[in-house]
Picture 1: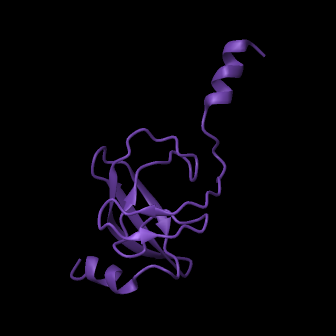
Picture 2 (picture 1 turned 135 degrees about the vertical axis):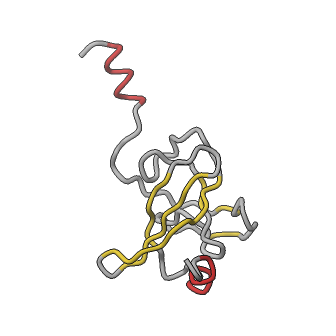
Length: 111
């Protein structure tokens, strides 16, 4: 393998899920969130942060806030669609038992 190709492959983000247990302060509402390794959004306001290209890699350079813009059921599980307010990137995320379902219903009332 050429040195250039080796360096490229070594610096590419992994497409595999990378579990990261990280606590954070929500950039939208200021709530303190305790991460469990799968946490990717604030459980209070449901906003996220554009930090990953692939889940857990922290390779996205944007860093913009991601607004919850949709919700849907997928095989019996609720999922959110987030859209970055900086670059427009959209992605789907699972909701967890810790998420505020009342906030979910308020966000999407009448839509």
